[in-house]
Amino acid sequence: MKVSVKTPATIANLGPGFDSFGLALPLYNIVSVEETVLPGSGIEINIINEKNNEERNIIDIPTDKNNIVYKAIELLYNFIGQVPNELKITIKTQIPISRGLGSSASVIVGGLIAANELLGRVTDEKVLLSIATEIEGHPDNIAPAFKGGVMMSSWEEDGSVVCRSLPWNDDWKLMVCIPDYELNTDVSRSVLPKEVPMASAIYNLKRSAMFVDALYNKDEELLKLALKDKLHQPYREKLVPGLNEITNNLKHVNGVIGTVLCGAGPAILIIYNGIGVSEIKEIVSNTWDYFNVETSFLNLPIEKNGAVIL
Ligand code: HSE
Image (tube, rainbow, N blue to C red):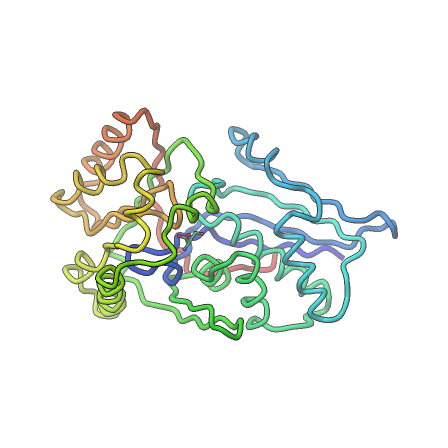
């Protein structure tokens, strides 16, 4: 038996909600899990990148027991008192890797849902969310990869994940600006301080509350105020040259609601109200050009569905 699961890309943080907010995008990875025919053949992991220009990434991804999909599946087997024996895992990737678009969350979630199905649905969504978050380290990409839409999530002290869907005003458009270089999440987290000033914590606390209220009330002016951050972006600016300049250059452009780092970066998300597309693109391209960074743009709606078994 072989089970395949298609899981969307995600963007985490969304400004003030570090490790808490995230949304799903219509770009997908597909993970297939099957028991291999020959007993004793062990673990086989194949990674197929559907974008040929990213071959180097493929080489960097472990295809042994250090692979994160395998590790997640192993935790699920352990949860039911078993160990995985003969397994073949195939990962087809469309989501750009190490850009802040949730490629790892997507394959972790896909692998877990597929393995759970293969094992005869041994556990429920709550446990899968919790195992996925344990592997990823934070739930903000995991929750929307699993369930789609815009989500708030919290990894609780007991290991459980609390998450809720938030509404989205479809008049608010997303432009994802993807630079031509990678930034590993561990590297991007390593520059964050262990403690932050109280004023920064309060700054984000207020803006997280504004963000939720703005979404419920379709309040564009409030969202403009909310899409700011003092907990991670200021520390990551040195890893994403041009972030500060792009944010400043777009501040007064008609139509722009906010500019935020996608997850741990380096991609940048611009939320705008449908006007000014070419001006926004030009500003981003020109600014990154100054830093010798090439950009590709994706204009995408929010993916309302999460992971699906194919
Ligand atoms: N919240 C995470 C971070 C998302 O910013 O490090 C990256 O996976």
